[in-house]
Length: 524
Image (tube, rainbow, N blue to C red; front, side, top):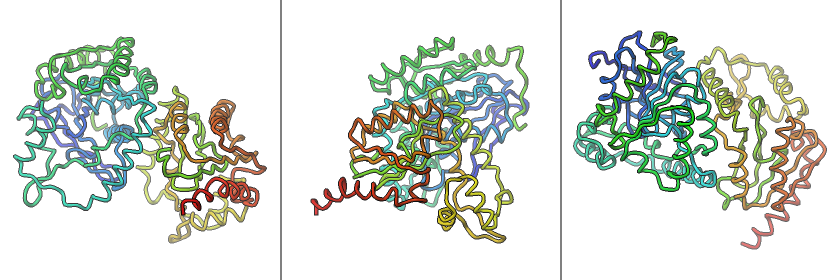
């Protein structure tokens, strides 16, 4: 199979996703996802030992190997990687396939398989549990840490990138992964280094070192795991990821995930070795993977040959004013828009909640929209006359006054040849694909130290939702009241602050005079 290896290039909006392909053109497709800071070379030694009837597509995840880095100012996350995987699936015109994934690649594969269960026949997880849950109470600290790390990274990004000799680069990789054999180090460096004047630099984006900011809870992980329809094989290394986890997480999370896999009649095996066992000693792993693929996919009567190419900073905010918003929005899958949250001070917050069972549906909706956007051409972007733009804005916001429409269009339109474009990015209208649970949102709400004023419009927020959503909003509003924050209702619609500011202004002015200005004057 080694002679049948070719390079893969999949265009994406910011560059390309690279990878390597093994096997015949008409082979059954198997996608291979490597772990954190590795690249598709991670599968170089394993794939030649697997069934020859398959066509293996090993990807360099975005920011790794030879794949393009994300644009400046953008985070890497498991959800974003899952979207990238969907882009590859669309580009290769795949309908049904299996996935082999190692380490972080398993977290991406687990999420993708839960979101698109009808597409994945079988999933092989190499020293990974498919999901990496976080304690809900820790999420605010994780998010804050990642944001601060990103700001620090951007401020230092102009510093000179360190250049290595090949030998020094090998030493550094070995030091960071002491279980890797010398051969494995050189395999990973084939796509892990970029030649520059004077030596080599590591090809991976340094931002991949940041933690996954939008982690999921154990409850979310178990719900997503329950969505998986295909067969799953977990191959755990005795000296691998299980030993890397802290004991509380190991006891609380991994045991429940493993039990859930077993309850679903999936296979869990443990073999002697370390985290990169599939790369260093593929002969230990290959028999399990080969037998699994043969039994669960290739020998099935319905098997068809597929064609490959057919509140995060509480100490910084003095006060928050929420205008016809609850601060955290319980959101069912069909809800067509978000409610904006205005704040006084530094923070700007818009978080949506959703029922656990809606994870797959809501996230898929957002992914489909993003893929549609990727395919959009300049010719498809509509140019309006000013009057047409007014009509469109008014049609989507019928509570706006004519004066308010003109105000919003002052910065909401960009003049082009033939008329105007809306200046906002259309991606703002897409579903937020990763959002915390009600429990997590209440946890974040409890961390707010600032005084809060919630000003609701009687014809605004409460009228947008069904009874279930109103119940969630009521829980949030009652929590504000329980903590001695102010919740008031005024006559008007959702844009009352813009249409009739005289109704809202006295409440905000009194709030600032009472809760903020005296404290600041006392500090002067």
